[in-house]
Image (cartoon, rainbow, N blue to C red):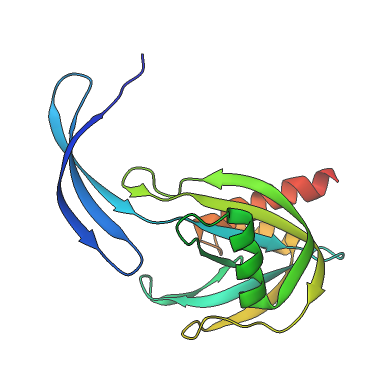
Length: 179
């Protein structure tokens, strides 16, 4: 049986710098009326740039919400209507100075579908060329080069907690192991 929730109306809204929040009244399949809080986000991308020796260029960035610096794959926010691959190319160049000759889609993911309307797209980038990073004005990060097998170990040991990085590293490693 397929269950469906039907939107009735939105009763509250907040428009922030990065996210919007709405509270919807919805009717459930059994006729009950409930409230659903939804965080709206334009989505984003993450990229696993791997060189010919299997090293991945990651970024370490302070994440205010968690109060710590996290090791992540390069990533960024989509502009509304922006093509995810073009966003991936832009973010990889901004954060690391790297451009790639090949991008392989690792698919899309919904990071927190229980309350957040956000889609993330992941890419494996190969055939790398190196240049100067040019991060956004108030973006502070360090680039770290780590072998894919070490990143995988860090994911499996719990040293890496960022969900998009975990998923992207696992998918990238599976593809690289099959090539």
